Amino acid sequence: MLRHLPLAMLLGCLAGMADAAALRASSLNYQTSTVPTGEFHSLGALQFEGRWRTGFLLNEPVVNCTARWTNNDGLSLTMADGAAARVKAGEAEVYDLLLMARMHRADAARTGIQETIVAFCDAGVVAQNGRNGFNVAGSPNWDRFLCRNPRKAHMATTILAARQVDDVCAALGGQWMSAAAAREVAVTGINFTEVQALKLDINASETIRRVEKLK
Image (cartoon, rainbow, N blue to C red; front, side, top):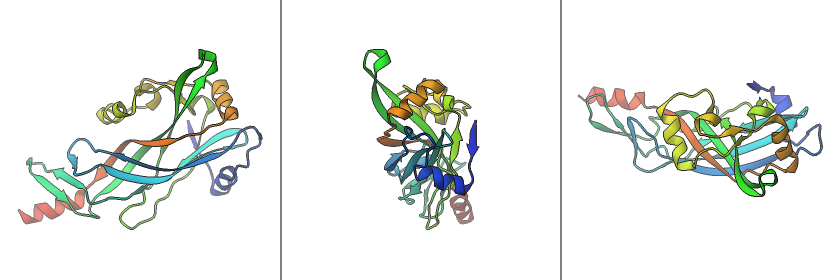
């Protein structure tokens, strides 16, 4: 379950105002890219940049992320008749962008074997085509906060693009950490080092209308 927080509470938690001093807030400026699937064909990977924030408020985890699409002129679209159409800059919009932040650590309980720990975030309104983005922080339950050992990055987008999923962690072959285990990681220190775009949707209705008028 993901709870949305009022702006005042969001500002407090992202400033590191955790009620438990051991829970440390962190943030990461990121750049990432992905290649769309389905009817869209990328003339180059779609590129995004933004900021990922992890904080704690009233002893609960808080996650927020923002995203900006930085190269909006690198798409072509397969029309209903099979013909390809170039999508002009500003004609397409990216939405439903799901991001995954990743960190690695040695799990002492597993004799020091390195594991991957990730968290997920919907980027909200993506900044694009000269417009600002917007997002609201979410507060997942502790036992739906951190996912352990999902599949490799190159497999994730293919898996999620193929079907709608209710449990992203399970769909990627990972396992949600228990509330106690997630708190342990939070006390040790959450230090995400990279962010990956897992899935997105694209609206290019302007391109379709333009091309149809030319027929």
